[in-house]
Length: 305
Image 1 (tube, rainbow, N blue to C red):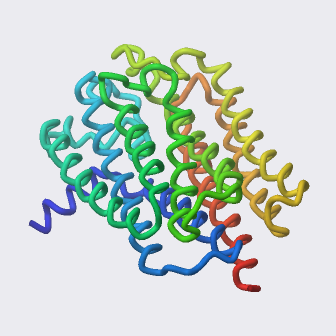
Image 2: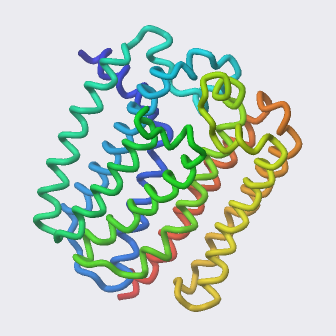
């Protein structure tokens, strides 16, 4: 039982769940900075449900890739960052087992979400349904947003919803604060997917998975990555200057050097993606650092109240 549990944890790619933790904490912090009531149990449940939803989405993605065969064709992956968990290809689980586990986790998330919505308000239902729909549509062969060049947009929207939803649970209504706060983090999380598509591009193309990197080619896609991380940090700079973000929100620009170094490495190795591991690590680090610094900025305001 213990060994099986560890295998499922590995299959869920726990290293990436940290971005969801940071997104949820950012939403909670934004609510506290605005003087919303503090609901610690609801905050804890929010974090757990968000992490479970992310784990289910990762498993669903491996199931979808197993169906179209892209992971089986992938010999250029940079584990554990690209090419999926490979639990199906290595014979650890079958695609059907992944599907069944996704359904089980999904029932827990939906049940918990309904209870949380009963406490926080009906608006949470719309946030939850939108997030689950994006996670389903990203990998399911019926829509396969990941194969239609819309994967990055779906990822950005999904993690933006995590920030908005975590704030809503505490605030009990919608507000512009988390909507603004979540954009830059969502874009940097989308950048993680963008750069991870480079090592997988050859196998994705063979399997008919037309990601943005496959569609644009390495040169244009590398420039697109640069544009994405510049816009993310420019968003913070602009709204901080406009006094819509906390006074210390400029600290979140501390992730910009990591993103720019990653962009430089990507440009240099755009045609040799097997050498992109440092750039991928920097991209993940930039997203986490950015979210943490924004959370700290909001947390400082909350602490002054």
